[in-house]
Image (tube, rainbow over all chains, first blue to last red; front, side, top):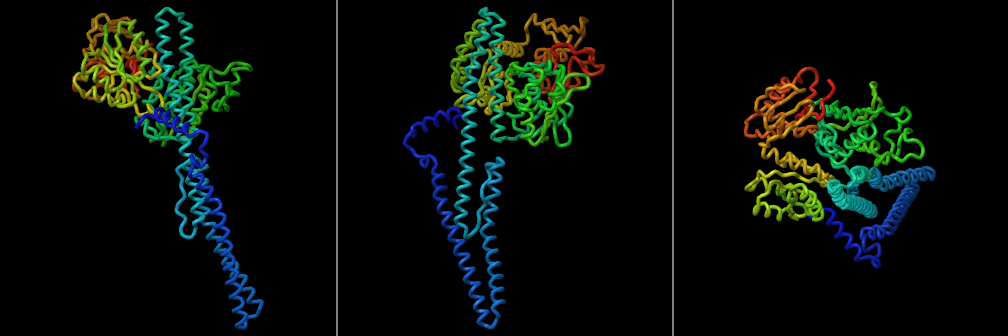
Length: 361
Length: 231
């Protein structure tokens, strides 16, 4: 199978070839099907309700007349007719709404982000509702495909942007060796790393937006060691307190969250003073202590909010470099996407404490 | 002059990296894909291989497997990993690579890792001095100084210490420690490593209170801090 970025190039060319003359139906035959299903559904439903009630009224009236013919008083015959009408209407309504509850269930699941939800077979005599079910399933498939396409495109774009970033880093070192002013090259290199970190956050963020988690067993201790190494932090701050620190999590998201925890301590907290990993009841907790002044008390309730920069930044200040105020917000979103939580506080001895909890494997 | 083979589909990176490494006495030979890389390895001798993980055709992990399975399979390999979705399945060192560097990497860092890998492959380098966590080791003279005082270590203890110090600040997996120490010929289990580490700690005066020079990373291995921690 060709890699995603290659597949995308191919797909883009393919689409351009049809641009201009193709109606929507050409690209989306399933949409055309759904539109056709629209009048079909209306016609079938009306017909069914009309015939249903016509038969119910006819049969009830016939029974009432028959009863009256056999000497039952008109009052009783009318009562019997109303009761029969009531019972048959109830049955009709029940038969009509039963499949609708199934459709409602699927619509709700789709709304909750489970794009794999599909309508179960609705049973006999509901061809018009089968058509609605087909339209809903088509819609779910189409949304799924579009989301997957978007994710692949984002991955491809990220890859394409990272390639020249890699070149830039090599050029930075070459410039240093060629005698370019050190501080200038350092600044250049820092910007390159900022862009790289932003791409990381974007990828993680898009994965969260699309709710596309791919869970597997991961050793948090090992991932934490790698995060420290990647960000150039001495791994001796790592304190693994339990033997089994495996979680069931999405690798991209877990790595992003750990990187953000460490980066936050490095950039805003004067460095990581301790990174502890321990297993609790059914969960694994990662604690990062930093060596900084801690959070401002007013900021504490907001540290996990996107774009919140803290009162320490002051009016008119630029946001913290490269963070876009997303760093800790992303940690929190990653935790919640795994059905878990993140927390932050100031330690008694000074410095901040940020914790990420994930479900154990 | 060292000869290093770069297997990567990014020709521009090869050109730029070749320029940088050339200034540092390393000749870089470029192969555009796995097949060309394996062909180059079969036909020529290289001191080390830089191997990109994400390549069209056969990927870097498969290339690594074939390098290790083939003749001359002991050539040091540094994997160049990307950090996107596709890199999720990369398991770096466990696959038999000697080291890995995440893209976009610093060429200086890459050069340092390259030299470290080559030193491990040919350990007899005279005059190499290492310092970390208050310990100084003269690798050539096989002498160890702790806070300025000479300490006697056995051969294996010194090798383990050197392996930790060469990667100071990074966690060295227990299983990899003996291999890193150049002692993968010794039939010792992972638990035996723990015994050697505890003897080493005693000799380095690191057996009172929480360890400051050689720290245990439970379930993974050991790490030596670059700087000595406060007692």
